[in-house]
Image 1 (spheres, rainbow, N blue to C red):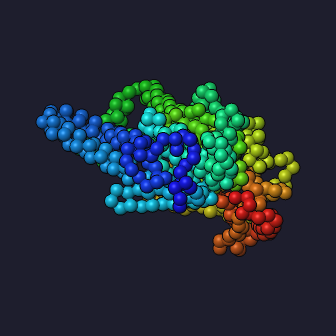
Image 2: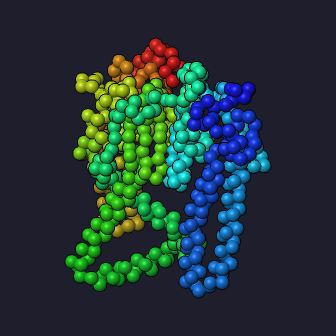
Image 3: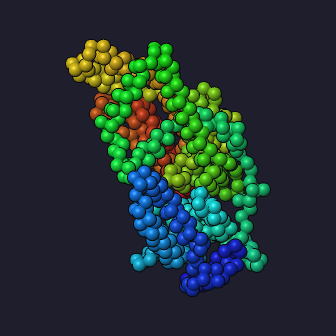
Length: 530
């Protein structure tokens, strides 16, 4: 590969000589990431060590062993120095080159590894800024290759300008665009992506602080207790306390029980109410914080390259979803928020979004806000007058019998070993399960129109999945032993990047859907759509 083909013509990348910019000679066309990358890695390592170091220091202070603290400080400094040195070596030995047909990354201190990804295999390039790199003005480039999010190519870290320029370059070479570069000569690389410019983008959805706060109230979460559980692991290591010792917690609860029993009846009621209020406040506050961290500055825009979504407070992500790679749409809601008309819209896409193929493009919106986005993606909301079909009545009966029967079986050992009143618990749960499944059957339905297949499910929090028939890849009819005898089946539709399953439909209906979908797939060349 010639040096001319390997040089990146984007002005933000190629305007500075490689040797002058990084201070070390490299093969022609090869580049290193930003020199501050090793500092970011070192600071990140320091942040990971902060909690155990703080707990260890507190433990030493409590025991009055200051001499040990004076011995630990040089060890910590030495460990940090080694970490920074290794991070510097890794940065020094990591290079990349944007060639004429692929992008190549070489890494490794002692053992070297070289990975090349052809441009035509790159579905898209996304930018991500976590907190510490963001403080240094750096971004991480993720090259989406459709490898399931497990082995994606990435470059950490580049300056914001350098990352944007490399992203534009890769997109241009992938599509074979020919535009004028900084010198005015036509080339297959682009120096300006009008589709990514904010002034050229059409804003489809955004969330201001008021919307974000309202969203946070519905995002009840008890994740804070998981954090406390993780902190308890450090307590075990540094303070000699076994956080998961049942005897310890039995003693704690025994003391609390004595204190509660010492209160009067009214005080006990108020104590229970106060505990529930604290739990509700903790869950709401945790949900609010998570919502602000994840969706701060949420913007969904339509550009010449598709949908562009940006969000995040501490970790800022910038993802582009090409229109033709949207395979299906999911409309969902929650038990509470659904009563107020709030819904969430996600795309099933070939590209990955933090390891998931579901891209949330409108996390908290009304129907009138979702409909334009759905139509731009090439889909249509379920129309009035669709020929809806529910699951088989035989499947409904079998499902109720199996789920309720499990609770009835559980009542047998309860009746034998527990006091008599306790047997009512599984019996009530069996009746409740039967009633809920019987009522939910009304909401499980599917429909087929000229270009789409639609599935609706969920009782308290219904969800709608819509897929284009021409983008489905396969059809499978699955039957278990009971389903074969009762003549119903589960229909699995092959959906790139996701799943589309319709359970418990009559066997004749399953075959009818299979024939219709296969006919739609045969009408068009699927490779032209993806």
